[in-house]
Amino acid sequence: MQEILSAFLGTNHELDTIPFGNGLIHSTYKVQNNGKSLYILQKLNTSVFKNPLDIADNLDHLSAFLVSRQQEVFFPMPMHTLKGEPYALQQGEYYRLTPFVPNSRSFDSCNSPDEAYEAALQFGRFTSSFEGFDIRLLKPSIPGFHDLSFRWKQFNESLSNGIPERIQLAGNEIKLVMDNLHIVDRFNAVLQDRAYQLRVTHHDTKINNVLFNEYKKGICPIDLDTVMPGYFISDLGDMFRTYLSPGSEEETDLETIFARNDFKDAIIEGYLSKMADQLTSKEKELIPYAGEFMIFMQAIRFLADFLNGDVYYGIKYEMNNFDRTKNQLHLLKSYQRLFH
Image (cartoon, rainbow, N blue to C red; front, side):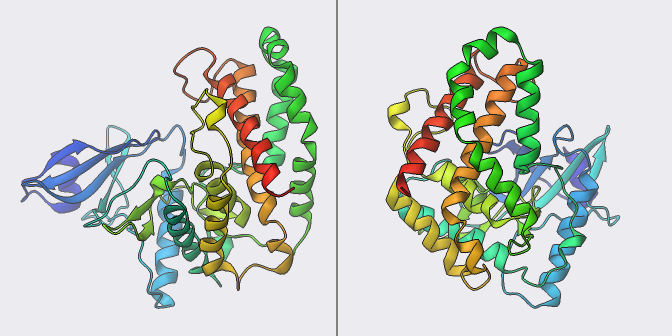
């Protein structure tokens, strides 16, 4: 660790590193001096993010844009090494260092409409800050990440090539998916209509990707690896998917899985407080669809992985992905009731 840190800070330092956070993708450490938090060090997961330099290029373009427009917004950007590189390389692994944001905290679940509002405001501010940015400069850090047409193709392949016993077991869930095919059809229509704009989109708007201050007011989004061109329904929809239900996607007690209307209203209000002037009238009509889009897409991703033998998502027990599927399909039905 000291060798990695010296690539960014030189050798004249006395710093300690301790594991930090509950992230599932990267290995994350807090860097301290006498107990004072100074930096966040991360080892990138190159199995998920296969081209780390694309992420660094994206962040450099975004940072340069904010400077050129003199935008008074703050996002913690990774540092460059003393040699001017975006990463320190050690044994083929990519490490990056980001300044620690003082007096900040994050939450693993959304527990009040006020928290939902603050987080949605931050993600709305993030996208709105890049109005006028040339979206062609951004490279997709995970190709096809929120492409529902692509995920639908993967799902259908799992129906053809998956484990027969699991396909039979999941017959009811497969039927529920097919009953919601209109969600895929609408996404395909969005792709064909220029009224829906590609913007700088975060793509991972869980509550733990927002920093809050001691008064539970939002400071900024973090974890910008998935920032790439996208539609606003990705960010708004992921907030609906992960903030509305008291129970998480891991919960097997479906009585705790339901969409809370006051949280839904808070998300919309917070997001539109920064994005209302940028969304077209036709895009605003998509707001209810955003939640359907993301919840449905996650459901078919869990189900496809279950049918394929659990090859993508980490599981804690044999039926984990099947239970996640039932969870998300239950949430989808509850969410749809909010608007009908």
